[in-house]
Image (cartoon, rainbow, N blue to C red):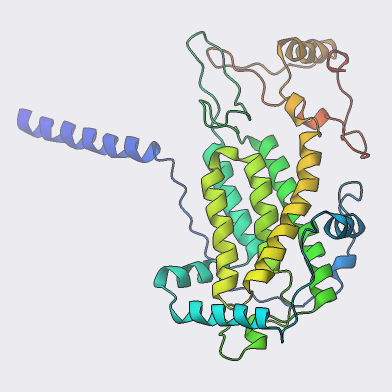
Length: 343
């Protein structure tokens, strides 16, 4: 009987140990499969689509930056009959002759669509960084520090308000960057490498989209810069994924090195506009301080409502309580009224 009971106890303890190990696993399991994407339409007029916020980005603004910078962000492409461009085509052919299984896997991965892939990558980051800080030795909850993102706690704490802002910035920046790409793609109208040389294979879904600047590289450039700002502790992963997207465009026959260089430069130029907005949108003050937290409680009590109260020990401060009350830093409407103590 004792032996049987010990056996049952051992089984229970082993099962509990496995459950504990599983519960501590912070890896994100990706179960979403993306099939190769081909555009339903070329949207040749996409550059004329309305801007999300004209105070931040318009086609006129970004073309002014591209064409008036010293040195220029990028120059017009070489003619397809030039020796320089022919050398780029030859380089693509050489690369395709020696593609490894890993490189083909990268091509297949990014064939699932750049916007979808970056959203998938970002969701993984939000999940990994959605970890509330632990209390320190004196019972206080240290705030993540953007200037020291690898410290404990790591920056950011990707709670729902932070995640919503991050998704918005990246999505809008990608949209505006691709509009800028379409402007120049149809201005220069240089076909993709697989259209210019029959020996180059189209290893992603074939389209009639022009290739200069490379839209894949544009998306790589804008996404890497936005995500480095928003998730600086994941800089290594972000940089690697961005390089993968550019390499996939090159290896698949969609772009040459000059297509990619121009696209990367354009994407980063667009990102700079949105980074400037993000640095001035008031998010840094959304957490408030003890005086402002108490002002919220007092205001709520004065209205006869029940104020939020942390049930943790030690008590945890509210989570970005002024996020929804921040004023737009540019010309947008007010999002709500700040309490008197926060003005």
